[in-house]
Each structure stands twice: as C-alpha cells, then as structure tokens.
Image 1 (cartoon, one colour):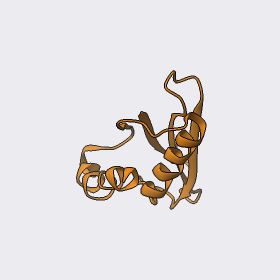
Image 2 (tube, helix red, strand yellow):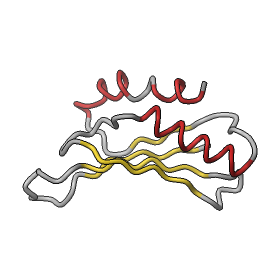
Image 3 (cartoon, helix red, strand yellow):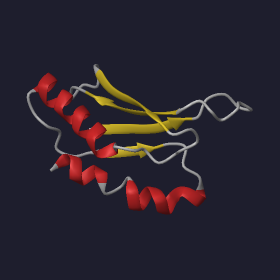
Image 4 (cartoon, helix red, strand yellow):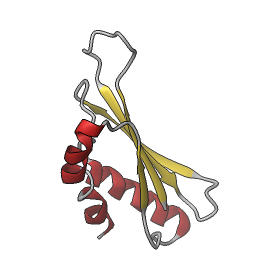
Length: 102
C-alpha cells in the first residue's frame, strides 16, 4: 500500500495564524481505484504530523474494511520536508509507521 503524506501551511505571505493541515492518503483496494484520506488540523507552521500513528491506523482500518485484508507492506511518500527537518521526521514520524501496522 502506497501512502502519501503532506502538510499545508496556508497562503504565502499570510499572517501565520491559520492552522496547518496534514493530509494522509492511500488506496483502499489493490487496483488503486478507491482512496481513503485523513485530514487533520495542526499548529500553524508545524511540519511534523502530530498523531501520525493514529491517522495511519485509521487508514489501515478503512483499507481492511473495504478490501477484507491488510496490505502486505507500506510504502510511504513524505512531501514537503526541508533538509533541516529530516532528523525530526526520522525521530517522530518514521517510528509511527511500523507502530500503526502492528
């Protein structure tokens, strides 16, 4: 199952008071014709996805309900991370993937 993750931060040049939005999306079937998504509000400007494990768990449950089984593996594409944020993603987001799949 291929999962995509990104965080949006509102309009360029905005006041910075609007919340950032995290989106996690993945296919609900093997033919990739139906998709599920989890969208959640975050602190303005916060790139690390808060509650990623729970969001992935929700997506996996939707997949299991739609197709009758869990996927054999997860491949995660993470967009929008700058070089200075790699360590934070490795420490905070990467462990959430296998934890959600257990």
